[in-house]
Length: 172
Image 1 (cartoon, helix red, strand yellow):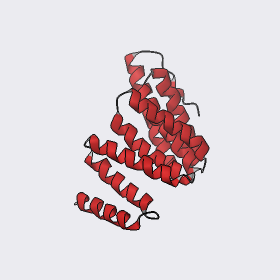
Image 2 (cartoon, helix red, strand yellow):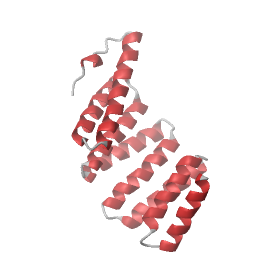
Image 3 (cartoon, rainbow, N blue to C red):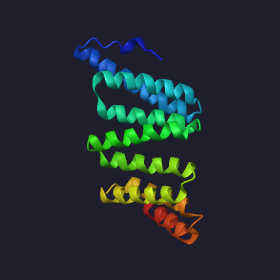
Image 4 (cartoon, rainbow, N blue to C red):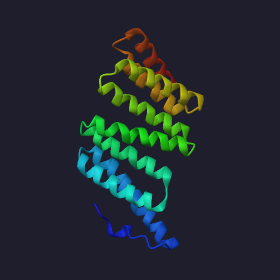
């Protein structure tokens, strides 16, 4: 998808517009994917990616790679989603956003789960939960506790119930 507003000639005002258009495409990508228009989501992500790459906005490139991966994941293309999520996590680490990286690692554990590697997925989710806790991000840590509980139900139902109850209590 080509957007004529992504004709960045180099001025400060043009750069601002360029960033705004790329961010709009990023938002449209996520919205389209959530509403089930996965191909539209991926096309908007590709346009946003071209814009952020042209601007050298490495952190934004990482976010858009996640959006592209999300679109592929929702289409059932786990093999196509995984490397995009892995690159997105690597970029988050490169730019020093370890909370974002851990949050994405938690989501990547879902892909691992869907691929059938359930023990590895649970291990990865617990590692991401611990990292979120270490960074003192309460909101994402509580979400991760719930996430781990859902993954643990088959292997350890009593533990899963305790985890889910703990997450519910922490939300109060």
